[in-house]
Length: 445
Image (spheres, rainbow, N blue to C red):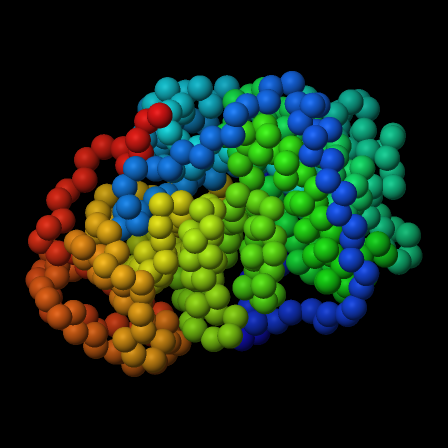
């Protein structure tokens, strides 16, 4: 499947290139050493907190959603209160710390994360030789330029590497132990001071030539060596974040293209985010194949089994029914109490919150068992108050009819005893025991 998808970030973010079904050449490379300096970072934190692990109320039959407010678009108190009550997780920029108390006042259980790029420093956040007080990264450009120029990644020709298409984004050496320590110290201190619950770590990369096709850093000439650098980063900073009471969720977009890498990276994280999940626009929907539907759905299942967070983000235009139902039904096939879904219509459209759908207020109850195949690449999961069915065959394949075995109600309120689904489509169905949901899905703590 050679269809290429390019994804980007706003002013304060980077870019990841996704090539569906295409991965770069892998070579052998030495591993990056792991040196745990968590105790030093814990002592360095001015505001250590007791780790917390709140769980939203309700079971896996209820949809959870998130809001990535990373373009710093204007907000109102009413908007913040509404989204705090109905979102499980919200991500803000570092300079938006004043919004945290407003969100918590509306819903003390909402988890508010701060955006930080793992892999770059930004020269536009340095003015007159002084780094901004609140940064989209963990390391200021001016600081690194003056004191640690060795942290800048370089090509084999000695040129510093930047994010292609994103001026001012300079790629840094995440495998360097001193960079790791300084990054974590800075992020822990600023995040706890502002009252954030966690850190959203952007740009956890897998390919050595991401952002600069065909050019790998001389420090990490292979994908394997680059991946070892990130695993080192997560392992070496883990204790500092947990001791400070901060959760960590990393952007692991395209993990499906690398066998085992989702689990390897999340081992020392509290969760992962898949920025390009199942639907890449309204017409390009990911079916089942070796790097397809089941691998992305397994990300949710693996994290739920370990008590970890998963955020998934389908891409499609407003009003596109098929990708919406395909993504939502697939999410519910594996979802539990820690996973969340939020769609996006435009790449980098991280301003206002995503649309709220009527299905988000449904409660399908508790699962009566795990999901199961009911035909080739067709899957079903039953709940005490409903069921979800997904046809993960290619979009162009014919419809498959699935008999439900008992009366259910479809989205229009029509009683049905079977559903007919074409490839890359899904259905969310309710039983009569469903009661309309009112209010927040979270238990205030």
